[in-house]
View (spheres, rainbow, N blue to C red):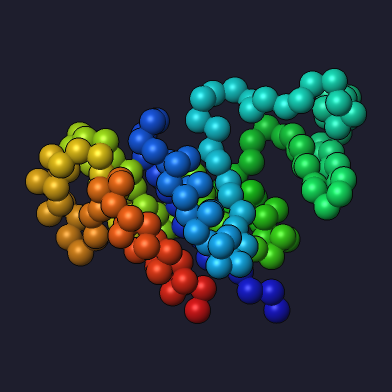
Length: 175
C-alpha cells in the first residue's frame, strides 16, 4: 500500500508572500531529504503560459488531452481539459510518491493551511477559512485580532521560528 503524502496549503491574497514561503519550505525540507511536490493556483485568469512551438504544445493544440516529455530524468506534463479539480491535481502528484505536497493557493479547500496576511482586514476575511494551522502576518495590527483564531500560532513573516514551526508540523504529519 502506497503511503499518501502529507498536504499543506499556503494561502493568502495576492502579494502576501505565498511563493516566498513555499520556496523557503522547499529548501528546508529538501535539505532533510524530504521529497516535496507543489501545486500552484494560477489566479491571474486564463490559462498558464506554455512554450509555444514545441512538439508538446503542438500536440495539445492539435487536440491531445495530454502530452508528456521526458529528458535526462525530467518529465514535463501538459494536459488540457475544461478544468482540473484540486483533487485531480493531487492524484497526479501522488504517482510521484513524494512525502509532502505544498499547495499554493486554493484557499477555500479544506486541507491544513497556513494563512498569510498583510493587514487586519486580510485576517478578517481569511479567518473564516477551515483548517488553519498557523498565521504569518506582515503588520503588527494583526496581533490585535489574534483572538479571532484562538489556539492558532501567529508569526511575523520574517520570524525564522515560524518556518521552524511549519517544518516541525510537517515532520509530525509524516510520522
